[in-house]
Amino acid sequence: MSEDSAIFDENLTDTLLCLPSALVDQDVLLRFVRGMDYFIFFSTILSSFLQIYVLQQAHHHIRRSASDQCLHVFIFSMTMGDFIQTAFCYPIEALARILDIRDELPMILNVTVHFLTWVTLSGSSLSLILLNLDKLLYFKYPLRYSSYVTRRRGISIALLVWSCCVVFVAGAWHFECFKCEANCSVIYLLRERWGMYLLFSVSVCVVPTLTSLAVALYIVKVVSSHRKKLAEEQALYQAGPARQVLVSRLRTFYFVFMTTVFTAATLLPFRISSIIMSFSDNHEMTACSGTLSRWIMAYLISLNAVSVCTLRRNREHLTG
Image (cartoon, rainbow, N blue to C red):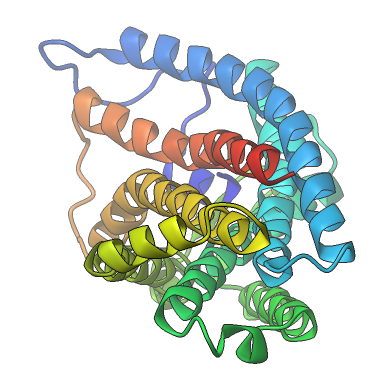
């Protein structure tokens, strides 16, 4: 959430400048933010242990050359991004706000948190596309899947995705697309260079999420249209490895689908609202209810990394 902190230029120890509404005033907003900071801090630490389990299981499937090893490469890639966020970036941000020490943290630490948050959020979002494309190829071209999708290709694509994410974020820093004051505890987006943030939001947040959701919905259509055929195949393979592979693939698809839907629900609201605000020239004081809704959408980004790991943990547990 570090790249979003610039939009909320409030110190929790100071008076929040928003217009009180019927149900929400500044005190309610402060209590909500404080409570969410505690929740994010403890939940991210706990979720990190689940993500370590998912990483271990995915690595195990990759090394043993499982039939769906390429899928596990993408799961490993996506989980690694979420793990860095929940084990390092989000806890540091939450703890700094809780203890009110954001301005006292070393600049190198703040810069590292900002940089890693951008990179890992990008890598995790793009890895979700790879997960859905893997499922699409399997259900659309089952006979040619094994020749198209290999572990070597999966690892190469994942490394390429992460390399592009690092280059993109490094470019944003190099071209000074935002202002970093004092110890860089908060970054401020420059209106004359808002295009880079717009490009970031669209290319690695909005488009990947919408693309993944579209692919997932298409796979649902494919699976539904072939439901009778799949039922016949399950009846044909009453036992043995063929039936186990088919059942595992169907189960995996539903976990990937749930992950995609949850990711869309948690990432899209804040990104879309940020894009809309970037085109707005209205900088008047907003109502506290509006500020609260923005904070809720921002916290959903953190909750995405925390909650999605539970789905992936269940998926790895069932296939392990």
